[in-house]
Image (cartoon, rainbow, N blue to C red):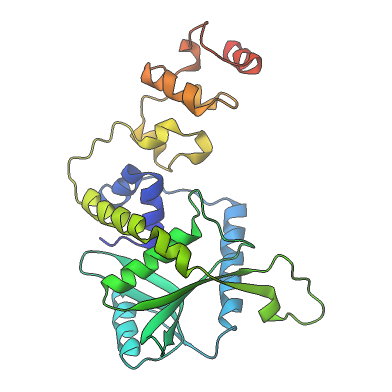
Length: 275
């Protein structure tokens, strides 16, 4: 049971949903990618292929996680650089696949380059790019590989194509080493907690933390973990505040029909409740 970067993201959103994925896969509901989601995935892969061309000819590492990790260590011993999709496993169960790593001969360590298809670096929500690359550094170091500098490659929103694509103008390369240092302890602590949590055999599956979030932010297995919440519930009230949502839930009110007449709602929200 490995904890990958994707798993870590899922843990930060909803620990119990990830627990289902790892321990009760028959109950886990995988998020269904929409056509738009698939388009983003495809575009992200195309961006990654293009960004690799920013570097001198590198070595792409493939195979199963175990095969790729073994090959990665062989190439690192010979300081082969750059490496694409270098893979690292730890005895504690961590897994990281890096987009690009380059040997830094001055520091006798490795630089990490994370490729993003966005035009900016996200530092919030479930798509925190700094957490992503920090997790990779942590896993590499736990695998015994020293890391020096960290960079995020993303699309340059100011770029305008004129003739052939100029890769060094299409992409921006941002040094995020200091940002990673600021988040390292938090990511390390969360990763350790995740590994312990996933081994717990007595997790209460009667609800999850997503109960207090809006529908668009809940986990994929929300219906499994919150069976007492009706399909059309208080969470569907338009623009309901987090405070009001929590007040209702704490009073064990889940159905819109059970909301008291004197509960503080806006006129539009009250119309929705009374329909």
